[in-house]
Length: 195
Image (cartoon, rainbow, N blue to C red; front, side, top):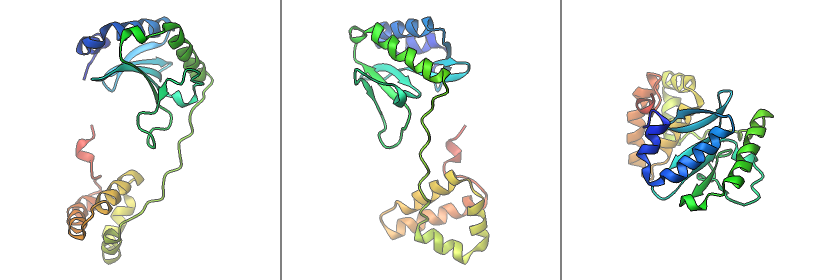
């Protein structure tokens, strides 16, 4: 993960011309430059507006509240349909594709939206569906039930999905047995991966 924008550009030299042109355009808007999640980010009063991104097959911009942009060119994509609500990407496969005047219009609109405080409202969370195996275990062990209830909704969902997603009963039971001590200790299923 790059610590500076220059290091990021060096790491993605195959897209150097395009990333450099976009960087110059973004700096010209007056946005603050930073590195977030290992990639260049451009902020307004500390709030993310847009980021540069480079991948194997393309480079581009990520608009944090891109779903609010008018998108007259139809160029914005939702990279994780069904998961991502606000974020939209504009992808380029070469620097020659860049129409900097058009890009600037999108960036200016994103900045205006941020200044106006426009945000995509988060979707209501889905109701937690606790698998039968976990329900049975909690009915038989009130301490386990209390520990599960004390977990954050996100941690509860992790356990429910992990246990309930197994196709075989034996696998669900095995996952439950491994999860019980972690639930009692107040740990999330994926805590070891969090910073």
